[in-house]
Length: 232
Ligand SMILES: [Zn+2]
Image 1 (cartoon, rainbow, N blue to C red):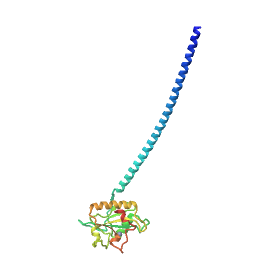
Image 2: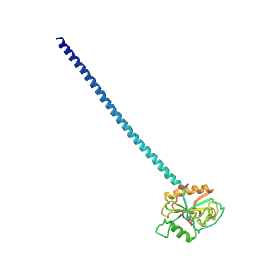
Image 3: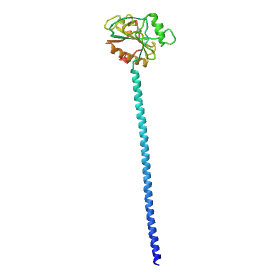
Image 4: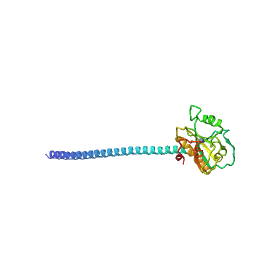
């Protein structure tokens, strides 16, 4: 009898223990689940953050690249490149002449099919007339030096600057831009001209930057469709 009761008590204790354990297990499970949830949320958040970070990095990088690219373009625009292509006509040699004026002109090729053909302009337009500027800016924005600055190039003809001086060739530099009467100088040409003018202004004390039409009104109407504001 005694052992019978003992067995029942043991069974009851065992059941209580087991249910307690079950309670404990289920508690753990819930916590575990909750933890999983939290972990998942955290994971998601960190994934979002990561994505945001990547996005940010991409946009930061791309904007940095943009700035870098823009800067490179700007730098390239500001680089002065002059190719020498000296002619043996259209000027007289001089030493120690005082340069204080720059005259802007326009030229195009009227003899061939391509109005922008530089060789035709130089050898078929200038050469037969025995004229030449100091510089010519081709339609693709390249600067060619045809006559040295120190020499007197024949580009202005009969002309007068605002202070009354005539014989403008003697104290000026001539720059030709390749464009026709029906087109404006393009971006590359304006950039090249700006760089060239900056350089020449650093070399000489320039009083005037004028168009051919300013010094020979009625006789000359170039530079054509030219905006002086763009080279100031
Ligand atoms: Zn001219």
